[in-house]
Each structure stands twice: as C-alpha cells, then as structure tokens.
Length: 347
Ligand code: OKP
Ligand code: ZN
Image (tube, rainbow, N blue to C red; front, side, top):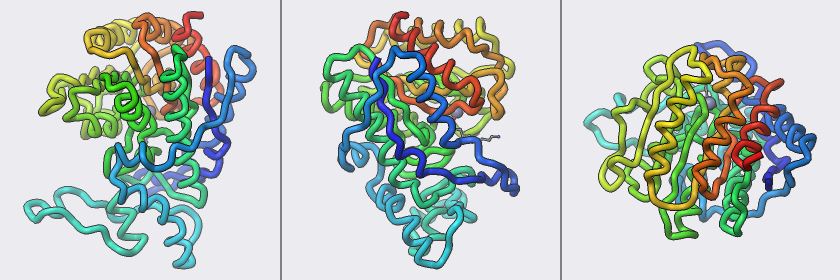
C-alpha cells in the first residue's frame, strides 16, 4: 500500500499544552509520526513517498482563507513583538460574548488574533507550525490523488491531526482539517459523493461542521460520548445535518470502557450507513486513541481489534484514503496503524 509522509511535521514541536490552568507535557508529539513511519518501514508492505505541493486552493475550498492567512502570519507577528516560546490564546471568542450583537471583527494584535481563530488552550503555535500543517494537508491530498489514479487504498501519515479544525476555527491539536480537505478534493475531482468515516476516539467536530449542509459528503463518526468527552459541544446522535445535508451526518457515541465486541457491533451500524450512501470513495479519519492504553481516553479496545476494524472497512469495497488523526500511546501506535491498514488492504 502507498503511504504518504513528510518530515516537515517535525517543525511543529510545542512542549506544552495548557490544561485547567496547568502547563503539562503535550501529548501530540513528533515521535508519534516517527513511530508510525518506523512501523510502516519495518513491515515492508508499504511504499513511503513524499507529498506533492497542491498550493492553497484545495485548503481554501474548505477553510476560511483569512484563517489560513492567520496561520501563515501568526508566528512572524508574535516574534515581531520580541516574543518566543509557544503562542496560546488567553481570550477566546465565546459566542455568548457578542450574543445578539452580530459577528466580531478580527483584532490586529497577536493576542487578539489567536483568540479569534482558536477555541482552546491545547493547540500552541510555534515557529514550524505553518510549514507542518501545510505539509500535512499535502500528505492527505497526495494520498487522495493516488486513489484517484487507481490505487484501491492509500494511507496519509498526517501530523498534526485535523478533524477538530472547522471552516473558520482551529483547536484540539488540529489546524487544518486534512481529511476534509482530501474529501472535498475527491468530490471535486470525481464529481461524485464521498463518505467520511471517523474512528478517532474524539468527535470530529470540524469535519461535521464543514460538511453539515452537504448532501454529497456523508460524515459518520464513532466517538467517546461527548456528554463526558472532549470536544463536549458536538457529537450527539441527534445531530444529523441540515438543509441539503439533512441525514448525511451520523454520530455513534461510545460508552466508557467500551470493549472490542461492543465496538465492532456499533461499527457495523456506522458501516451500514456508509454502504447505503452513494459513491465509490471513502475517507477514513483513523485515530488509535480508542485503545485501552491511550493516556487521554477511556475505552477498552485491544490491539487485536484494529485488523478486524480495518477488514470490515475494507469489505465495503470502496476506494479508500486513510488519514491519520490521533493516538497517544506511543508504544502501540505503529502496530495499531499497520494492523488497521493490513485489514483494509485485505491481508
Ligand atoms: C485530538 B484528536 C485531554 C483533554 C483533551 C485535546 C484532545 C484533542 C484530541 N485530557 N485534549 O482527536 O485525537
Ligand atoms: Zn482523538
């Protein structure tokens, strides 16, 4: 299987996230991507290639161009103030602030701008962030191109992840929504509907928002029930899309301690929705943070289940682009990803 990868992810290397007012070591680290790459290489069944530069067009098809401009300028503007370290918001544009008063304008200072575009405190910007997030988007697009070129499946080793990034806001370790950018590219290139299946532990609020009113992109997600789990404010089963997108969003909340068997049963429901949706192309947002050992989540999946999840996804028989999202237990990441991909590929 073709696996697309870029070394430029390593420039996004913040040391901390701010959790409940405390600076703790960040979980979303460059070693994640290195562990996965090492496992792909050791396996021998993957050809690793670099990404092709797609420019800003496919990104601006999904994200507000002003947010992309902000990401490009953020670090330079911060440095121009004589600042360094890591750029994290202290004031965020909560909707209640301007309730009944219309939209806010983008502020002009770095402190104001980051709170206009970022929704939380766990997604710092550092010197290499912009280069890394552009590379991650190109990694996803290049894997999509491989499938457009006739490959049955391709893997995009994206880092940082993307599914929490919405059209005009970023956060949750995510800046650009790599899976949504790839899915939109596939819709435009094929002229056909595309399904997105999100098996990361967390609800892909960004992907859901981007395609909320789209009838030609299905979004199906299994995730830790957001009544208890991040990102808290999206992901309920009542959310099914709107307008032309009515019925083209499906959320399947998972209970705390969810086992392999229970997970596979719920997965089958999600896969039924994909099978009932038109089109031949599937994008999978793959997170390994559903694993029992994951340090930031609460399910009970074992490493043995990922080949079976992959096998059931592969049995849909769709051309499939697998985009890497989360997964924070470094010792298991490589085996989990390789197992899933081998399942998708039918071996
Ligand atoms: C990104 B992806 C952890 C709080 C949540 C942010 C999680 C972002 C996950 N105690 N931290 O969906 O894996
Ligand atoms: Zn996650």
